[in-house]
Image 1 (cartoon, one colour):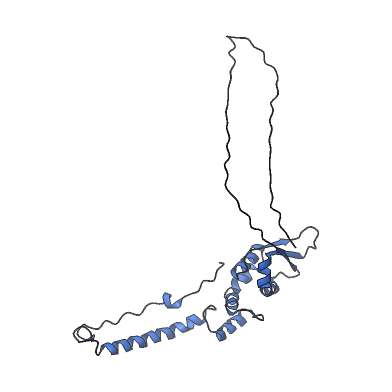
Image 2: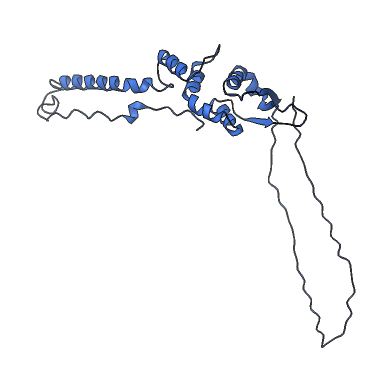
Length: 226
């Protein structure tokens, strides 16, 4: 589960049936223009549509993506989510929406990556117990643009979902765009077999040498880190 899926209660709830008055009472079939009781039927249907909206209102208030801001504050308090300074409302709604699944994923490396994806940060990579670094340091690799745009969000996520007795540090990567093109490889392969007919001729077998040459080429794309 990585993307926010909004529940549209208006579409999931049963639809109201259309008014089906008899043709001699619909105010349209045998009348010139629209007359009573067509207006009465229209008013009654509007009343029932309003009742339907009232019944769906509690369901809409339980979804953090659609509820009012007052209800959102209660849901955030219930799920231990605090809005940081300057946080956009839509991002705060997502953090409240995914509070349970984020807490479940916070204990593993793959889960921490899913948390970043759900909240729109994008790609990240975590490295633990690296050579030359203290054992409690976890390095988070992110793109330079992601850190610039979501620094406060990342710090909040680490503070909320980070592991106990661990130190986190960011390592910025500068993505380099590369292009791969298809090519053509030609190869010819031939197999020759020979047998010695002993009754027909006499021959001698001598030890020889088999020459084999192999070339392996490798290429890497360096990346700039800081």
